Length: 151
Image 1 (cartoon, rainbow, N blue to C red):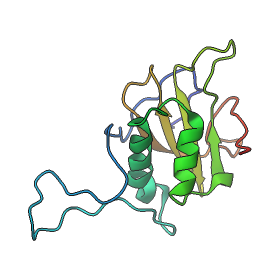
Image 2: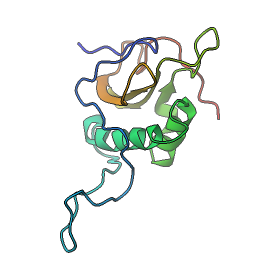
Image 3: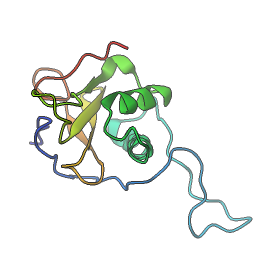
């Protein structure tokens, strides 16, 4: 059984760690030459599974990680909404600890049917991590306290 951990501990990069510094949108591959089609960019697959949408979720996560907003949970939620994910299916942990210090890691998720796309970023995480995990017994994606997405 795979469990999602609280925001205090790094998530294991199982099964798919993301590559940092990626971008959302069409970009030619390193070996692409004129007249040769580059690999297609990831895109939202509305009728697909969580696993089908993991490459797109990962690309969005990587694109935010590459910005100055890399430790802002809101930046990931806003980017996922702009990319077409359902805001009402999302959760995010706090950017700060209970004593007001910057969080060691931030987790965010999108519930997709009976599975969850989960991302974790932050100083304790290293490179961003994105995974697909089952919905937990409470019907949510993240365990522990999350912050309201009220913006």
